[in-house]
Each structure stands twice: as C-alpha cells, then as structure tokens.
Image (cartoon, rainbow, N blue to C red):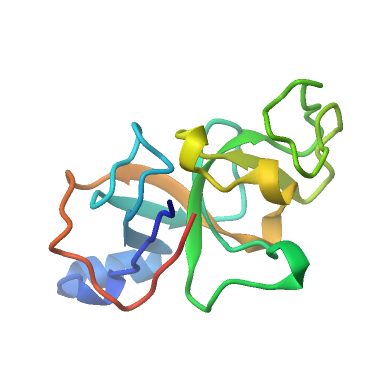
Length: 160
C-alpha cells in the first residue's frame, strides 16, 4: 500500500497561509497504511521544509528512482521514518529483505536510510537503497487531526 500526501497549504485561511509560507510549512494528508500505527490513513500532519534531519524523525520526500530507471509521477511523495543518517553503520542483519544489499555499510554523505513503520506494506530503503537527501521535502513536526478521509484535496499527491 502507499501513503499519499496531499499538500493543502493553499486551503488555509488568510494569516495561517502566510505563516505557513513564511516558515516553510506544509499540511499533508496521509493515505495508506505503511506508517501504521504511528500515522493512519486520513490523518493530517504538519511538515517543516528542511534538509536537516536526525534518526527517528518522520520525513516527507520525493519518490526515489524506481527499478529500471523509472520515476513516479510529478507531485508524488512518500513519508517514512529515518533510521540512519550519514556516518551511521547499518547492522549486518538490519532488515529483510535487503534487496539493495546495504546491510553492514556506512551511510554515505548526503544520504539517509528510511523505513516504514508497517514493514509488511512499506516500500522503503530495503527496496531502493540509500535515499538521496536532495529528495527530502521536510520533517513531520506534529499530527494535526485524527483520521479523516472526506477532507482530501487533489492539489498534490505522494506515495510511500
């Protein structure tokens, strides 16, 4: 399953929209179960635009290159948890499946390792390897609401 994030900053009222733009904040809606139990489909979260992140944080990022050199559609993003940052060594038995064979390696500069909390449904670093930090959109800073699936805007979507 995928997590689809919808950017709804244009839907904010007056001053809140100005605040969001000024401080680089996005409000996104989760769609999918790859981050359960932490985030459920329909929940809205506040994201701070940044490239700085530490292990344990939830991040939103553009799709990495898919197998065969394909890329996902424009405006699609993923949300995952950072489990390793540059300089961290991954344990030799870090996760299964390790399709990209990154177990036991050191995370290179400018890259991250991310995993979905719900491993059984998540497409993450186990499948596409190290995540280029340039794909990072921002860090989730708080949950804004409970699950609501009737409130999603089609302005931009992302998958996880």
